[in-house]
Image (cartoon, rainbow, N blue to C red; front, side, top):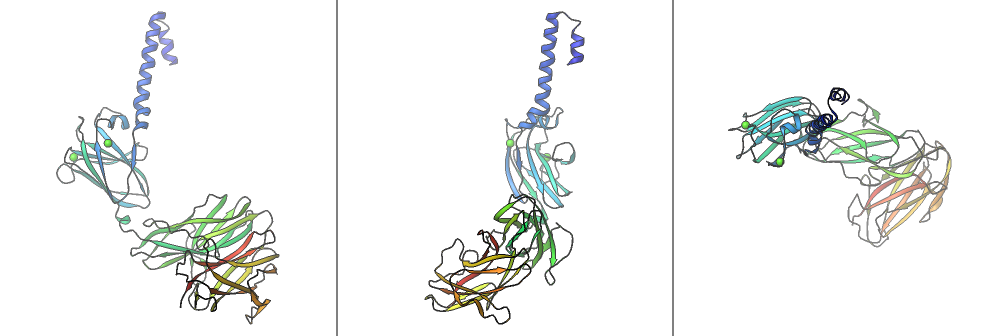
Length: 421
Ligand SMILES: [Ca+2]
Ligand SMILES: [Ca+2]
């Protein structure tokens, strides 16, 4: 405006006002066309391998609104986020208008491809190899006049065609660290579907102040293999093990931290507290950190109750290691948020003979014991059922929790429980 003002200073005051008015009006018009209008044009997210029904109508934006220039034909704007590199096919078909497709980068600054009539009849189709990222697709008509009508937009991403399902678990399920200490746990993703899981990885789902990383491991040795934070493919029916590392950068009171376990072609595995969540805490001083592992007798991870009268018991043992500091720890068993009529007895055991030593007869009372840093005490749990407990491994479980003198959980593990008459 400064140069214009210098120019118009030669005119009379009235003339100057008129020129100012015209200049400001012109500036507003430019603004409207170049950014205001484009920002108002809606964007619809494309779901890979689906057909979208759309319509070019009188109130839609125009090519001119989005890209500048003089093309006043109506356009619908779509956004595709690709999780994987693939050869993607877009098809726009219509009986009402002559379809035309544009493919752009996400900020509409670079045209990647366009097509008018490569499909059947006048339909537009284009196939192009795209890297993972976000793109814009413009559904348009080939006439610069205002062609209106219904159309379908089909997006085919071949590698995402076959969806699969995954489930996951972690072990151990609790860690207590000092601030900036690394809490690690092992995770397993099982491909429970019938298609290969593509790009299966893990991310932190809970919004806690922590650094996160994961890496594949060799299940035979638990040693890390491959590159950190690199997803892998999992064959149908197969599983992959990972090491998860969570490093809290601030104090964290004990809480269940959840993760997203998923492949690019699967929904995230369901979250089950105590099964694939990590009870994590971080404090200024390293507390006791009891890593606990439960071992059942017959079926791995499952307690089988022999009757519904509370007279027959199944048993499981829990081996622990205190990887934190020495402390007094109280051990107790519960059924979490599910109410089950069970008889839960426990004792600390002699690691060699497995005989009860604290107390010498199993008791329903919690067991309190001093656990020195680096030691590996063992415990036994005797479970009887006074009702019929259906097999619901996500819901019906017996949890073992180790609490410090402040009542904070410093270790936990669990087993599924069911009636097996
Ligand atoms: Ca429209
Ligand atoms: Ca066409």
